[in-house]
Image (cartoon, rainbow, N blue to C red; front, top):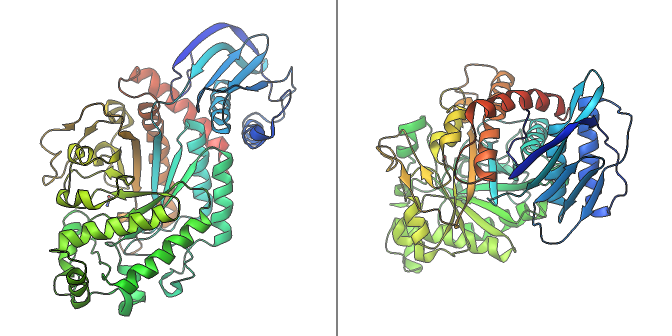
Length: 481
Ligand code: ACM
């Protein structure tokens, strides 16, 4: 039997296959975009199909983003939200099959709903520019597997890909235009995928520092100690001063304006080489003026200040694990923290600090093409309350960190990093590396989707990998071109 990914909560096969239909009986305007998306994909997969009947899509309160789908004499789906409609339709498309007798649906009864709010993927757009078509293809993949968050790592030491009006000199030659990003926002919205834009600060800030040294640069040399250990990449830090925070507020405002309906904005906050603040006169003066006793407090203060900027924009801040435990009390508790390295602060401490967190455990959820990633089977063994790392300095290195099944763990995310794909480091042409990167993601995203859609426990691995292979072939035909 062919099963959808992620596995529905209940699924019963109830009879022989019946002729498929991709027509709809009547369409509530709320569901029109989801239906358009579904019909576009269905046509790409199967061409024009003679409709034997029409799908009934009904709305009922109380299902959240879940759905019921029954295929028998009629095809009926019941949903509460447009997102739920996308999920029901992705399941239906996964069940459709081309046979000698034409395109068919199996007869089934399904009830389904996600366990985790956050089922995400991040793409590093800063280290390696990705054409916008690549992002459309990732959005297609997200739709297929009901992955609902797509984080765009838009800035880093190497580049700024967001078209900042307020800091035009910082914007890299290869960047996205506002029109491209707005079109991507619309594309993702129609598919029930929420974009999470990231501006990474106060660390990973070299591109800003180089463009505006008088505004952002520190007077101390950036030594790149910590990141160098792992990746050979040197990282810069933002100067702390009132004028700099004022401009960062404008940066986040611009981001919110383009990502008009993103409930979350990611403020970065990782791997800041805070010792660069020592000896930076402006930053030290800022500490004194704000009663901050050391650079760790300044780090916490930066995160807190950026978080409040996002809250003032009516959005929720998201940040990487990075700030010190002793500064937890400074940071607004609305801030959602990615627990990834288990080095700066571990998940139990973040939970105790009152934060909601997302699990993006380096091992097995990082893809650092071409050298480090884990099999999809290993991702199937991961749980959203479990963290592991191969790096000896991580507290999750010797043995995994496992927390209670805390509802404050919102879900999980695969992070696709481009550290080793930057032009200076690349040992293959960019398009080859991007093709490989996409292939690695396409193979692993089904497992992440599974483990976040249904928390705790694993499906039969062999059957799951068979369905992964089958759906990877389907996905190739779906992609936006
Ligand atoms: C990260 O991997 N630097 C969040």
